[in-house]
Structure formats: C-alpha cells, structure tokens
Length: 244
Image (cartoon, rainbow, N blue to C red; front, side, top):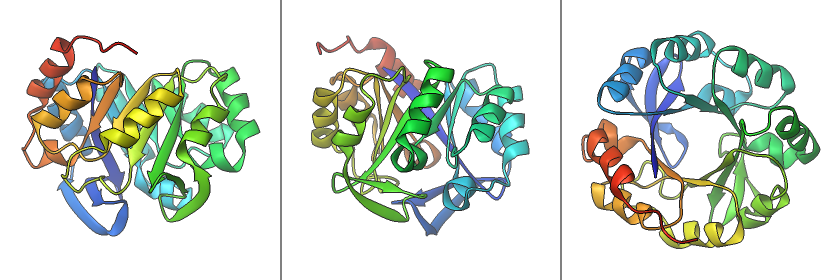
C-alpha cells in the first residue's frame, strides 16, 4: 500500500483545513519546499499536493511553489485542486507532475474528463470527495445529488490512474478513516483507490492496509506527529496484499 504525504497549499504556505472549511485553517509551514524535502528525507516515496486556492476559485497563487517542489524532490508528485481545463492539465504535466487529480470538472463535464483520460492515459486521477455519500464540488463548498459510487462507475471504462476517495467528515478531524464507505467503493470499482481523510494513528494505516486499497493519503497526523512517516511507509511495505 502506497503512503502519500499530503501538502495542502494556500497562499504559498503549507496548511491543513478541518473538513475542508477554509475558516478552520492551520499553517504548518511557511516553506512548502522544505516540507516536501522533509517528507522525502523521512522515507516518503511520493507526494500528494493540493492547490486549495485553485480548488476554491479556479485561479492559483501557488504555481511557482508547485514547480519548486517538483524540482526539489526525486519522487513522483500528484496534484489536485482547480484542474478544470486542458490548459491547466498541460501546464501541470509541463511542470513535471506525475499525475493530476480532477474532481469538480469530472462531474460538471464528464465528456471533457473522459477526453483528458484518453489524451493522458494512466496519468489522470478521478478525485471523489464525498459528504454523507454524495459528491461535493468546488473546493467542497457545494454538495451535489450524485452518489459517490455512481460517479466512480461512470468512469469504470476510462484509462484513469485510479481514484482518490475522500470522506469529508473525517478529513482533518483525526477520528480514523471511514472504512465502511471505503470498502463499499472498493467493491464497486476495479481501479486502484487511494483513501483520504481521517488517519490519526498508525493503527489506522494498518487497518487500511488490510483492505484492497492501493494507497492512503496522510495529512494532519504527520504534521501533528501522531503518525511517523517512516512507520507508515513500513506498514505499507510489510502488509500483504489483500485479496480483491
């Protein structure tokens, strides 16, 4: 199971939100590049970046920071947040990002997202952010009527790299992941699923590794020191692959 340390960017800083609430922000680093280097030094093999400014407004103040992170670390980086047109997709890959996560635009314009998956096979990730099982959009500010599993199944035949599945109620709350909802998603699709939201202790990582999930994103728990990255990576490496 892959461990993805999360670096959430807002105004050029490394921050964490609670349940996606922009009013509940904690700044964990003035220098996101230094944070990225730290996670790699501690054994991180990949990084999950989120552009919170772009997710909320569609415009980004973090481009130079993202470029600097990609240049500074020798591991693949994926980026989510505000990826809503082909120009942004092209720019992301030109910066050296390995994968791009698309959420809002996949819902609003599924034909466009399908086209991007064909243009960049194995590099586009479907980002599904769920609140009570329903898909949230626009930086989690809006909640649709579309069930998360239904959205996932819409793209079951597209050449996506996988799905990042976030349970908003657990995100940044340090209450443990929603394993029940995650297993329902795993049962519904045949593509790799990365779990996001709720990891608060090493036991949560172990529990996720016992499912068929391909990876998990860890954020606040790393920054607050309740999970050590090297320990989490070791769990991911040592856990035998669960039967699908």
